[in-house]
Image (cartoon, rainbow, N blue to C red; front, side, top):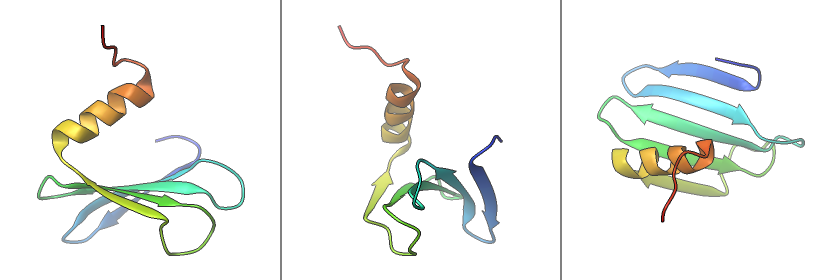
Length: 75
């Protein structure tokens, strides 16, 4: 998918995308579950425990994705 993105299939769950966002092990993991749920995990360092976890609906995930991509504008 690109440099800095690691994709892993999670049997029976879905797909996990690990995205490196900075030095020192900072990363974001996104899990797209087979049941349609999306989970966003934020890791501050190279540890295994996330500093934040969000469960997102499809609409919320699309909105966040659009903002991050710079395509979401409000008048």
